[in-house]
Length: 200
Image (cartoon, rainbow, N blue to C red):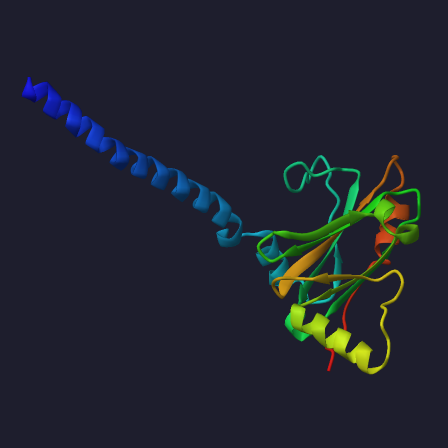
């Protein structure tokens, strides 16, 4: 009678070890999946950093049947990108929607994490006026405005505090009909991305 009882006790004793191994495997899998974007040798930011100067808007090639671009690229989407490094100063983004072609802007960190994303329908008159800053830069701006008795920013300014200094902004403009490539390309050429003087 003691042998079956001993085997049962040993099996029960193995349950905590089995649960610990299963939990460790799940945790390792989740951590590896979450870390992949930051560790990828050919991430979007690393590709941009290779040949895109800071504070310059780059118009990306449109997806075509011969050159489809990244997975799920929309052939009616026109993209422009701007890389930034806030250690050199705050970054100002400006863009205007024309009302006929939907425009969206997203601000992302170097690891791909999205800081903010919005469309022209969420902005005053389809106008984007975004200031991207670090926490210390935001505090310095507020202090300078208090010293000058200025309590408000520009009425349409959206200030974003980025948790990390390096990243990129992505402008996405849609053409709703064939034959609008030139019109849309001219509009996206007017996007602005400029590093401003750091606050004193």
